[in-house]
Length: 117
Image (cartoon, rainbow, N blue to C red; front, side, top):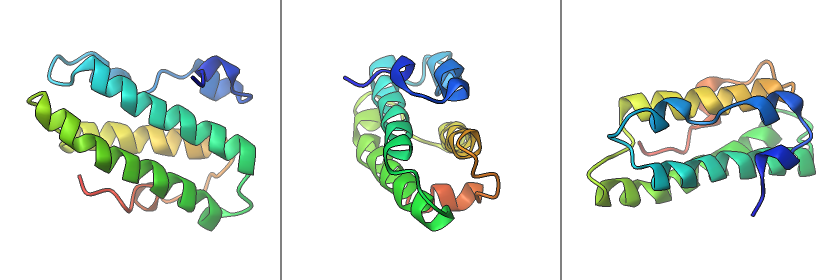
């Protein structure tokens, strides 16, 4: 299993992904853990492929958003969902990732454009 501590980017290593979701009982921690893994995997993908421009970055973030789409059923199964609050938190974390890796001009909406939540 990939661990956040193994990432190279110090800002990312110190960041607490999906923190506000963990603090709310509405979101089951085991499902939020899977979402956190999606974001950590995205960071590893960015470090491995080193996208040369925003279009290349968006390919990676869209893939992460698609994985969150797949996770939606697990939220439903636990009487939860990726609704407005969760969507905003996921979006904020995607934007944090983009800027931490130097993509300061990333469009927050485009980062998660393939999401269906």
